[in-house]
Image (cartoon, rainbow, N blue to C red; front, side, top):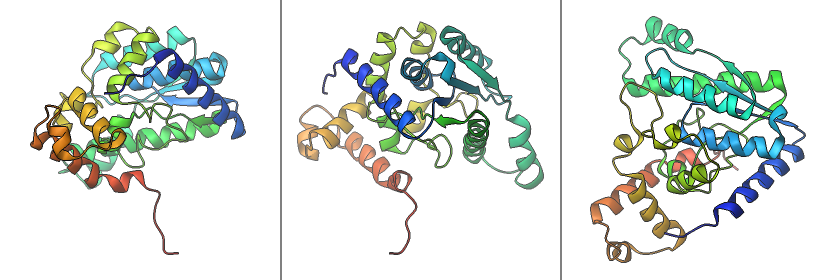
Length: 254
């Protein structure tokens, strides 16, 4: 897998955020801060780009999920000295399912949580006159591990060109608190949920295969020669193909 110059990449992302936000007529950026790796890295970079006085975080917990993540999100906000809101989403999410869809499975409930957070984030963005900064990485965007019009909704994706393993490297360079770097990656949509279990593959493996497919344009046979199984390669390709609709703007007839 390709090696990136972390210091150079940091400066490139900061310049991108600053340029896009200002060219869009905004001074401020707003981020949904989960206490996880990606949102923490996005927050650190946005502060460097816009200044701490121009960055707002929104922490949006659900009642059954990890309180440790809320504390980690607060830690990031305090470390960066940025303004933050806490908006508990349990009542909004539960009222819909309790009244209309009591038998909904955990995936539907998780998607509703992601979209509820999007609604809150965009509402506060209007209040603060701030542009919504995304927190997605290339691995998850390519594999469709995002909720359409949920966590995928934003104005820009500063980390959207970086694979998950590269985001880890950037987090270390930025000196993100170790408990955030070392925690098991999770979208925190239900108890015990982990990213890699849902994806069905380790990030390190997924990133290598994606790099060979997308960046080096290798064939399936060539990737197998790199030490990956046909099942792993097909799995990645299937995730990419099935989620293509999430990466397109809504289509219409010409």
